Amino acid sequence: MSLTAAMLASQSALHAAQAGIQVAANNIANAATPGYSRQVVHLSPIRGVAIGNSGTIGRGVIVQDVRRQVNEALLARSWGSMSEHAAAEQRFEAMSAVESALNELSGFDLSSELAAFFNAWSERANLTESSAVVVQRGLQLADSVRRLRSDLGATRAQIDGQLGGEVAQASNLLDRIAEINRTIADAEQGVRTANDLRDQRDLLVGQLAELIDVNVVEQPDGRYDVLIGSAPVVLGGTARGLEMRQITIDGVTQVQIAIRTSGQEVRPAGGRIGGLLTARGDGISRTIGALDTIATQLIFAVNGAHATGTNASGLTETFSELRLSPADRMLALNDPANSALASLPFAPRSGGFFVNVRHVASGVVQTVRIDVDLDGILASGARGFADDTSAASIAAALNGVGNLSAGFTPDGRLRVAASTGYDFSFSDDSSGVLATLGVNAFFTGRDASDVGVRSDLAANPSRLMTGAMVDGRFVENATALRIAGLQDTALEGLGGRTLRGAWSDAVQTVAVSTQGARLRAEAARVVRDSLEAQRASVSGVSLDEESMNLLNFQKQYQGAARVIALADQLLDSLMSIL
Image 1 (cartoon, rainbow, N blue to C red):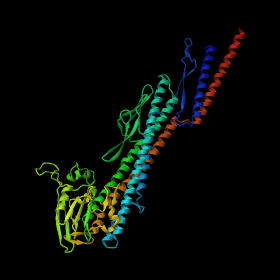
Image 2: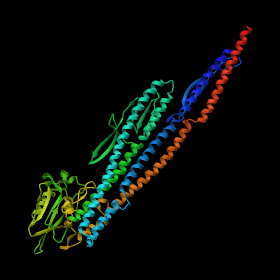
Image 3: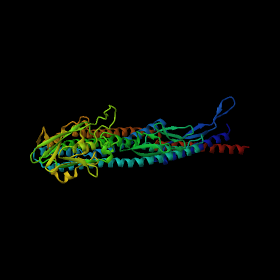
Image 4: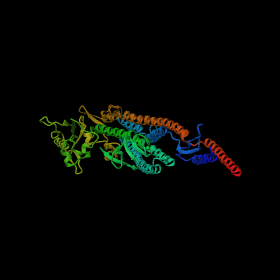
């Protein structure tokens, strides 16, 4: 090997040492840079040359490439743990907000209000409380239900707003990933690795994973395809975008996440978006649904008892709370085309009720049964509603009772009135039609959003019905006892549970869900921290290690320089001899 070859080999060593020092310096400079992956210079010996028959001798070193230290499988698992942790944290935050809104065991919760309401009826039956107290308890209960429903609705609306922002942010990240995909493909051209650009892209994917669970597939040209489930949202250099849509189904607003360019719905399970969707549906909407169902059954059950109640003086006039259009009055109560009743969460059934008309002076009572046919079968045996009972036919039947008149007010309310010198009451309503129409009702409304106490009753508590006709005679506290007993009555509309039992189940479901979300969040955080630590051990910068690399490359550079200096001296000596 000639002195020139030695100098060339040492020159290559100088270049390699310089590259190593530059890479180590770059690693040290980016030790605290988020998303940065440690880079390593890879060196390869230059192919040697033959020296006679004795073998070959090397010609130095070449910098083959500079690579990121990344474990792709570990990186993918880390993204998955980010999604799971973010989803669990979001579910826990949302369920904690629901639990706070319920405010159970505080003494000011719905369970306490229900107990106070029914206890007031019990005390009224025992003549230890006045009708005014009962009505006031009803107003407080209705206000508490409406306020709780409003709080839960506000929490759901807040989640919807947050979802809109998160989806917009995720869509923006998809655009940036697609853009950097194009830049990487142009920069690498299949012959080099754009390490810094790849780090930036991985950082963006990590941010996206915290928003929504994604799968990443790297293409041969270095570009990423990003999928949510099996739906691609980034294909190479093209982002398809995301959008949030709100749709109303059966009066309930639902949220969907869809691909902007195609409209295809995606169902994320992870990330903050997936966590918010889960909390919105399985947490908040389920609790609102339970509250609405309980409020509906409360309204129907109490109104059913109050409608057949009376006082010693009886009724001289009463109105329905439900308003019916002229068309709806003529349609059967069970006809799906009857918009006034079809939209109600409760419905009447076949049966009947009694109307008792009393001559006040003599005390003589005339009792007439009003039949209600709602079997959905025509006289011919075919299915249909033409022969079933309508509001108009009930009004006609009541109007046919002596000393009683019935009709509809201009605003569509059923009005029943007694002739002068007479009063009336209802009893034994097996059809539920009085409660459905809201005749002589206690509560107004349909569910938790609009429950209230009848306005004229709130203004004049003496209109409260506490007695009832039982076996043809007046029992002064029969209705009060019946309503007080509703708190322990299993209701068909609640699956055989009581009102308080159903609400207790709903509260416990929220508590269990919140606790489960907290445990999942803690477990997901441990997994995420573990994977982050593993990733840092592979891709993170160790300042101690880089300092050692600097010393090694420094020694390499100094050694190569000494070889060049020595070869130069030998060449000078050789030239002086010549």
